[in-house]
Image (cartoon, rainbow, N blue to C red; front, side, top):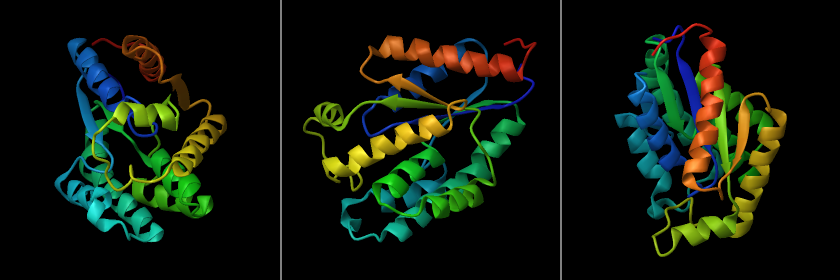
Length: 215
């Protein structure tokens, strides 16, 4: 059993492979006896999922960037209070598909909103909660589009190439500014190789916070 809960977020542009890696890691950790909670942001609770539907619906293309920011933060505040903090108090491993770095990348670098304002909004929504580890799976826009193929795009996915290039550059800036927390992994590697790198990183965090632990 862990002495302390572990919180790990996964980041990257759409179709970088986050969801697959979260699912595979969940199964691996549960197989080793760890208690794992898997979530997505926005989403993960009834209220947050309703907000997610508003944010991603192609019928809401005219959402103002500030409205968009506040909706993401509202969904996040709910999931932190309702799901994440209680799970960490129970000494679980929480894996989340996106967290506040997505807002910095998408609404900050992508939309051009004030990074300082977003930092304050993120802090308010999370109550200062910071992931123990963040995995940024890096692919470019061309690879993202290739993987999407003929699948329909949601509201965010409907943005142009330059929007996603700004986001990717923003993520790289986030990695550089948070090198101890955020780890960049090449999303073009085979799925298994990416999984091994992620497992290696999370194992280091488990050992750091739980010097003597048993599954």
